[in-house]
Length: 125
Image (tube, rainbow, N blue to C red; front, side):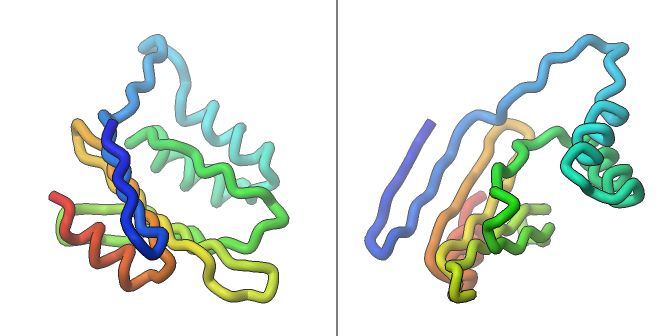
């Protein structure tokens, strides 16, 4: 794992992609759908999220229900990624995190602005 810190609270984390080891017959998609439903996600959205998760298992983001955050799937030149914007109680943007994974690595970029986070994430190959 490589963890780099830069001025202005910019950080980059690079690590081997985590492996999910489950028995071949384990119904991962159904399990994920139930997990999303237990978080009060609608049935249709839980099904869609579960399909995405089963196709490409990823880390689940631990964002408390009372925290203001925006989570979206984005497309970088190097492939799909997840972007999380976290906000202060007054609605001001506090932190932006971009997660991207390849077949072998996981990258996480943290910054105080969307523009900086995306710029750095785009530069990682």
